[in-house]
Image (cartoon, rainbow over all chains, first blue to last red; front, side):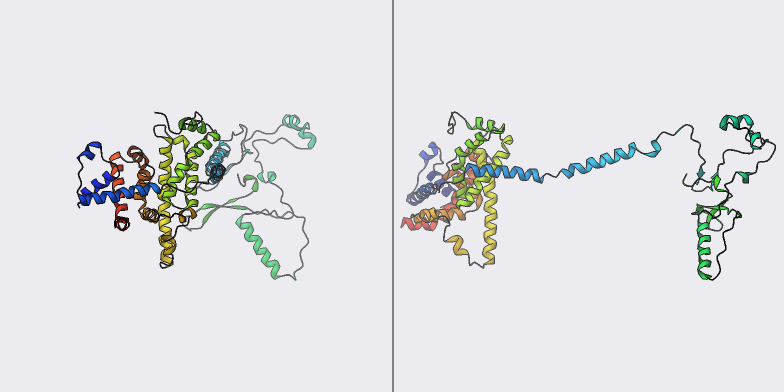
Length: 244
Length: 197
């Protein structure tokens, strides 16, 4: 029996043919026997429809739905949203509080030590003591209410050179610590000496002012000839603002 | 034509609408109404009561969670059976894979457990040997064949509905049913020959 004929028999036995097809259908003996078998098969399949009773309760389904919803809520990861939000806030805060954006006081006139990449240090000194107008009695009276003559001082003329040393800070008995490499080197050397020669009696502190060491400022750029870092010497610390 | 499932004056569509608005009692009514139909289908696909009940539970959980996706163009039962079909197909494949693995591990020692004996006590009481053999033959069919035979010959669904459930054309549904019947006929041929004698 050909497959097409078999398919037709199956369709006939299971009632899938139209009325016209049923009327036109003719079967021989062998096909009739096959149709009987297929009809029994169809009838047996209907018996399979008897199934045990379903004991699934509404409560179980309700619990399952609730548990699923709870699990889905728990699985929701708020940090996925929170992290970009926190990053955005941090960026906003950074730009809002940037120091470059802060308003500068109009009367600010600091002493600036500039250290450009390729340039040596430039020290701007203020005020210019040599060319500034002389201090008069009236100025002093206006400021502190005492005349210069009462103090035994005299007004300074612009013709006379002003000694910068007189404006320098008096060096204290114990030299102030500096963080410059020179000072560090000096300190380490003196430390070595003191450790090597412990029997030497320690000299009593003198009241005489010690000579002021010059300040050596080392910039980041290198000297083309020597290859070493370039250094500038400054006489007093008044002309230097550290960290400015 | 009115729906065959109109009880208490509530159609499936009306209950679905209420359930979508958060009325769980309406969904419970839908469950009570269609539980047996889904269970019958699930039991034919996985003939163990606990497995079938798991499938039914999962079908209704998914239905509840996806009520907003249900469109009124299809019948609610068709939609439910579509969910059940997808779920049943997945589960049947997983079960088949698991069974193969177990049998491989036991080197065939467990064959008697899966082939000769059924686990369900109600099934064990069936006296009709032919029906039992047929059930076994149906269970041994590939899942896509079993699916359409259950829908057409056990559940007696019309071809347009089967096409909608399977997501194919009506002609495609007819062809699938025909192939499945042919496969079943070949599988139960010895049984049929024996009866003919």
